[in-house]
Amino acid sequence: MVNVFDRIEWKVREIFGEGPICVHVGDIKECDIKRHPTYSKFRDEVISAGIRSAASSRLWESLIAMGRLSDMDGDDTWQMVILDCIVPCFRGVSARISRDFRVELEEVQSAMVLAALEVWRDTEHGVPPRHVRDKMVKAAFDVAFRCGNGALAEWSSDEIELLFQSEMFAQESVLKASSIININGIRDVDVAEQLRGERIGALFQLLGHFGVVREFHDDLRAGRRSGSVRQTMTTSMLLRSRISGPHLYYYTSDLYPSYIGLREAAAVMGVPESAAHRLIRVGQFPFPAARAGRSYKVSVKALMHFKDIPDFIVHVDDVENGALHASGGL
Image 1: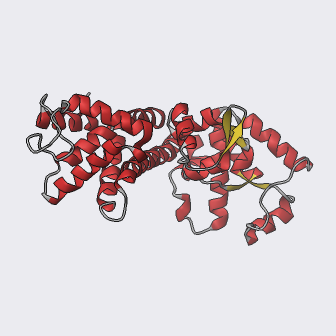
Image 2 (image 1 turned 60 degrees about the horizontal axis):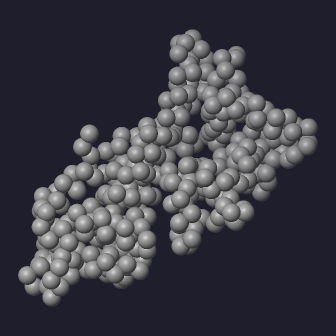
């Protein structure tokens, strides 16, 4: 199936064909260098230079300069060349996000191209050419992750809906209503708190991991551990704590391990582990990574922040009610 990346490549190849291409002055007749590669060879070399060291690549600096000059003439040919030399590193990420988060591939790829073009326009002044490619790639990756995050939220709600095929049960279920309500738009904080907790419980039940949550709740109730929420409690939370017992509020991140390996973190980010290692080596990994033997470990909270995954405050009763509804209990 033809996608936007393919169309960019075909358009550029249609312009240059199999003839030689000059990235120094744009016209081989005016260039002092006598030997010039075909576009296919030039493209392969540029992509390789970007992978090795985009920041220090003179080839990329020349390409960016040609793009700026052609923009001044109202010609977007070299802008298309730049895109064609960048999008190969978008293919793997876009395909994985499309597959894992059930997003249309064309939607992700188009968003990545538009994000890269926006950076191209915004970096016309004040940004050294050697940094432009990196900024375009980063912006494209960021928007791809956002596409995945948005789809994940919709997918979670849709999957919750599947738990309530019975109309009778659906009418009695608060969770069914919560799955189609924008919690952020609810003014009653107590209702929003309840729905948020029930939704979390239903999701863990759906994923088959509520046993771990139940053990965590048992530890909270027995005093073997305490909830991590303290100063951020609202008045209603404090009142509820006095009734149901102290320390029964917690952050959803308390259910996760504090750290995970770089391989798992890279999978969540939608990039190969080798790419994550490379980003760490050049100091461009988006959040701190701690050395663990020959590899690295990553803070789950930092990963959640990077992926815009909210760290909700929930109460054990609400979470358990949501799981009960999701399992078909009354």
